[in-house]
Length: 85
Image (cartoon, rainbow, N blue to C red):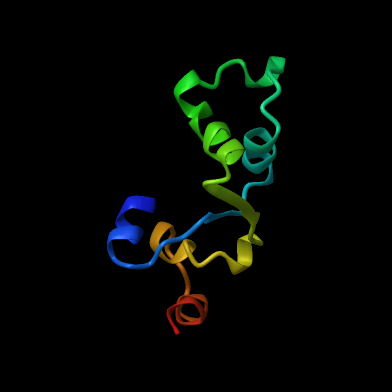
């Protein structure tokens, strides 16, 4: 993403990554190996590396305000139009 934006003439220091999953944000921000997280494969710990480098910043977005739902779920007409416009 950094390379693409740089080549388009839009260099960016930190990519904002929004999520409505507080557990995922907590695990990525605090990479402590606990009994409950042993099943997470090592390849998914890449997010911890890019967070440490400052390439990505994680932000919480309330589930009802998450525009990604438009692409992931069947939404009602009102909610769809809220995210579309």
